[in-house]
Length: 158
Image 1 (cartoon, helix red, strand yellow):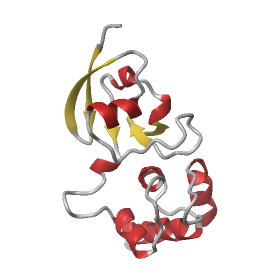
Image 2 (cartoon, one colour; image 1 turned 45 degrees about the vertical axis):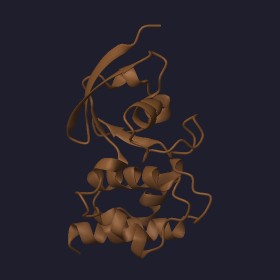
Image 3 (cartoon, rainbow, N blue to C red; image 1 turned 90 degrees about the horizontal axis):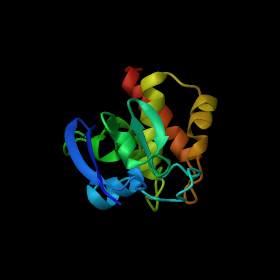
Image 4 (tube, rainbow, N blue to C red; image 1 turned 90 degrees about the vertical axis):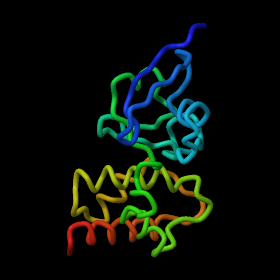
C-alpha cells in the first residue's frame, strides 16, 4: 500500500506527513508525529480520550483517518498551553484536583475548551451534557465540572 502525503496545520504549525489510507489520525499523531498527549482509550469513539478539534469541530481522532487531515486545522492538547504558561482550564484542573491517572484528561480538556469557545457561560447541566462523551474512571465528574465552571468564570472575568 502506498503512503499518502498530507499537509495540514497542527496547533498553529504547518505539518506534513506520510500515512497509509487506513491509519487513524490518532495513530499518526502518536506514532508518526510524537504527539503522545492525545490518548487512546477505546479505539471505538466511545471514551473521548483521543479528542481533538478539526477546523473547530470536536472529534475523536480514533475515528478520523490521517488522510482526512489534508488542509485542515487541528488542535491537540500539546497546543493548549502557551509554552510553560498553562491554559486557564489546565490550571483549574490542577487547582480542583480534577485529574488522576491522566488518560482521560487531555480529551476532557480539549472538549471543555471547545465548549467554552462556543459558550463562555455554560450552566452545570450544559457542561455535563457537553462532556458526556468523555469517560473518566478515576475522579468521578464533580471535580471536572467544578474546574470547567471555575475556568469559565475566570475566562469571562467574572
